[in-house]
Length: 393
Image 1 (tube, rainbow, N blue to C red):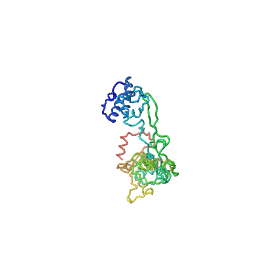
Image 2: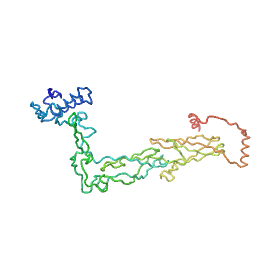
Image 3: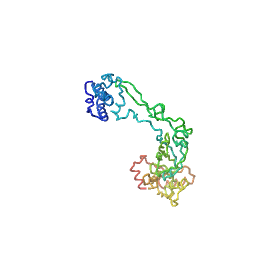
Image 4: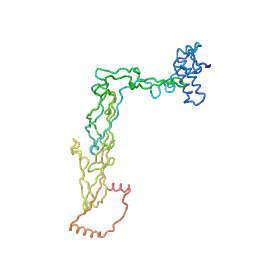
């Protein structure tokens, strides 16, 4: 190679090791065949790599500065012949000192964060609406009380791995047109930990954790619905080596209610009335969801809690009529409260005795409804029609 090695890298003869390495990285990024498809880039990359190999080695650089052969007669022009050029140097140029796949960082820790856990909890509708505190039994990994997460038998400790000498990695050398390519792989003997446990803890078999059942108190906020998840930080699975616990997520499943169905923050229920009551008008005592709160499901100190209200049904109310009771639905997670939607269902008698049938015939004659033709209309009201009925009561 006739060109001056310092000129190849673009540094002065007084450049220190850091300046030489920085210059090589810059040239390698520009000339590497994977980056630069120019046919001449491969040859230039070889020359730059050879220059870096010489100038980064104090002995070879000294020999070169004195005009001698930096390879001791091995043939300076024969790139890669007996050279100690490392693939790590190329990786340094592209990844700033970090080998491929994030390798080259030494042994990995035995202690790692545990996984998150998920458990489903059934709650009553009133519990979901107004909130509740429940005892929850969970079965998760916890820190081993015998070894306190170390994984070793009492009185013992891990020992350095003889294969990797505690580095957690071993070098694998291959030859290519670039010279010797050295890559780092996790040590198979210690699985990358850098240490071995000759006497594992008998309780946890060296894992540092065991499974255990415990009881937690979980506070369910008011307004949750099916699918809502309550997060309990650091109450999940303890990690290997006694590592920090993950989080525990409690997924709520609201059980069906015998009276109310839920639609978001609104409650729906149906009130069935005899035909005569719907025609003449009546008043119905309507139970509220608060009745479940004082019914033993969740004690409360509020003795003035309203558990029912009177619903006035106007004379002539038709089956299917909706009445909206504002503010008697489910509390929202962010405040406010939904509505209670009451649907009136008028029941037509299916069994009549002789006197009842006679009276109905008389009523039909008086109203001129002995042979009614009936009327046909659309079976579904528009959204605006339902809103109008709701506001008109």
